[in-house]
Every structure is written in structure tokens, then in C-alpha cells.
Length: 79
Image 1 (cartoon, rainbow, N blue to C red):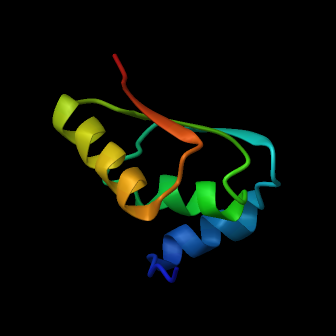
Image 2: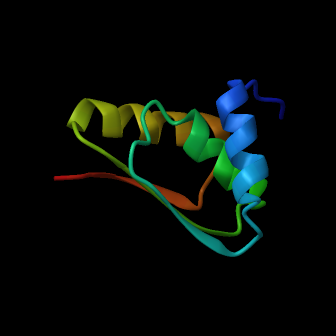
Image 3: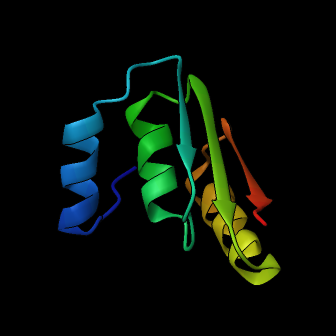
């Protein structure tokens, strides 16, 4: 599956280079593209915790995860 990402996401993936089995915390996850790209870069092996400030943003992030078929991350509301 091919996904288009903003240049900043591509830079982030290159900078972090998350290996399969990594644990990643995304504290500003909505709308979900960055979080999904991280999960895909890890080969869907590991843990990505996606946080955001509102229920609507958390739902949007979770929807992106489902649409992309990434199973390793969970979206949560942050305080």
C-alpha cells in the first residue's frame, strides 16, 4: 500500500529510523498520518502510543490507523 506523507513526516522517519520492535510515543498524533507512517516503518512490529488533546482528534487518529491497517498502535486522550 502506498501512502503520501508531508516532507516533515519523511524527515521524521529518516531522523528516528524506528526499528522493528521499537516503542514510540507520539504526543501530538492527530490526524494520524505521522503515527501510521511510524507503524509502517516499524513493519507493524512494536508499540506506538498516539496521544492527543481532544476526543475528536483521538477518534481521527484511530480512524487513520484502521484505514491503513496498522495494528500496533493505540490512540489515547492526553491531559
